[in-house]
Amino acid sequence: MSPFLGISPYKMATASMMPTLQESDFLMTNPRAYRSQAPQHGNLIIFEYPRDPTKQFVARVVALEGETVEIKNKQAFINGEPLQEPYKIHEDAAADSARDNFGPLKIPAGHCFVLGDNRDISNDSRFWGALPLANVKGRALYVYWAKDKKRIGLKLK
Image (cartoon, rainbow, N blue to C red; front, side, top):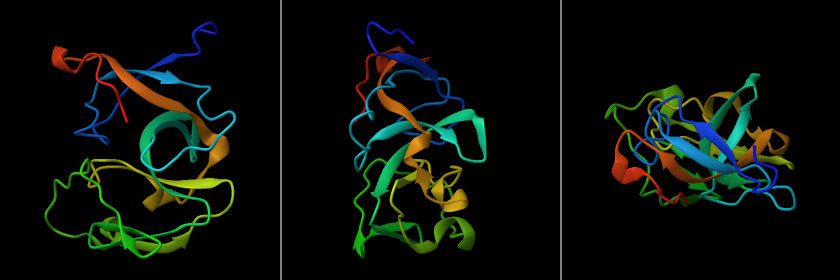
């Protein structure tokens, strides 16, 4: 990490965030993004995996503390309202009861709920629960290197 710029590199190791991020994309992140504020809906965050803090992953924040999240037949709902997610994909047309149905779960204080954009292969909050905010290590800002050169400089939202 560069203490002067406050940015840090990160390499995508999986396809869990496709199509937004590609496996082997190199991202620039802001590790200071959440020092004074919590992540917001839609943020792409870097976090320590709760089951193994030596690993870091990227996922999208879909629910915040105090909100109730539920997934029914691949559709996410926040506080009973369907979540509009133009970025998500499902590679498997068949519904899997463990993967494609979840909750309802009220997100406890000091936590958020994260999902990968590539829902059928993502290891996310559906499998290990709400993410403690203490595990959040930064916000993904942009792609600084990619196999597909047209993606270089892609700003992440």
